[in-house]
Image 1 (cartoon, helix red, strand yellow):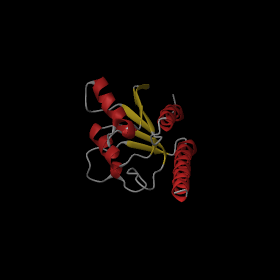
Image 2 (cartoon, helix red, strand yellow; image 1 turned 60 degrees about the vertical axis):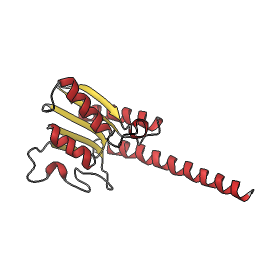
Image 3 (cartoon, rainbow, N blue to C red; image 1 turned 120 degrees about the horizontal axis):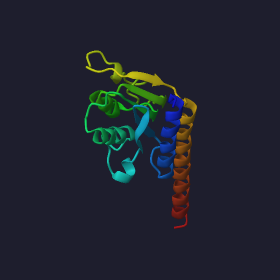
Image 4 (tube, rainbow, N blue to C red; image 1 turned 90 degrees about the vertical axis):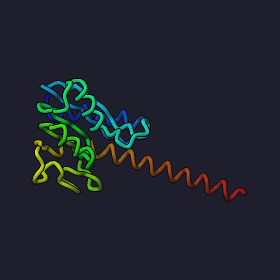
Length: 165
């Protein structure tokens, strides 16, 4: 499979998150050419600030491989990892990180911070950015556009109810 194929699998996870009302970020973790873990954001559902797609696939891969060092593995994620996830990537020794769209508000790979290539760290994974970037960006845009529209309609409805009093 190609980087694009694996990213399509991560996008399928992002669509699951979208359908559940979660921020639509999906990830897959690949070992020896096989997807061994796939997840999407679950912060709202799990009531867990750390339930990012990347964290979930890293935890599951560690459990499946019975080791914390994930050398020989690659992470595919639809949006540039945040600082927490970038730290987990370094600590788990992933060989490769492929992401779709940049995150200019919270990205910790290249956009806002450069955690994965910070001098002095004991591990620097290969980074590939922009794989299926348009699709990865569009699902986020659609989600937040829908969320803003729902919020506006709720505010209008609340305002109408107040006027009737």
